[in-house]
Image (cartoon, rainbow, N blue to C red; front, side):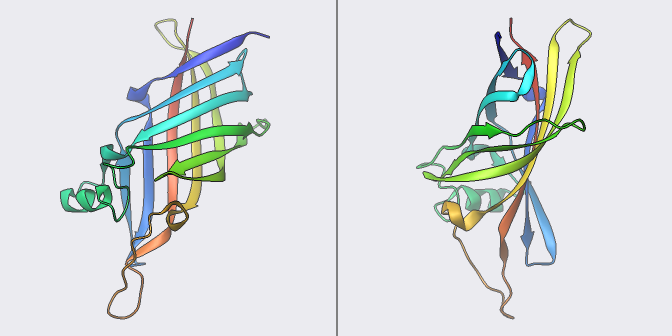
Length: 178
């Protein structure tokens, strides 16, 4: 079997997160700078060897003050920890509906923990310019405190200002390399 290398097309990709605020609403944020590499046996994504990095300084929630707080030592401490990293260790079998799981080591603030995420393989197509493209969407939940994002505040009534659980959605489009 031949090894196939896939490069991320960042113009057709996104990294989004959602977290409950005051337990009554949800704040959505994005990272705007990230990269991923994938190698497969032929075009079989169930054999994927993948790695993913996110530049923590690229976080945005459409609120400059909140973004500054997220970049501070209370959260990502971007000066000290400039990247989030994920290295896949196991890809589950891709089902007939495209659903699979991807397990790997997630590192945030130099804390590495194993995580398993749900994924959906969107398929492989040839674009109008002759490039072969593949799409993958990854969804999951992580506990921010397990990775050292331990900022905690309580409202006057004793409620949490920020939930521990963070929902992550990553949409990726890759271009097959020659």
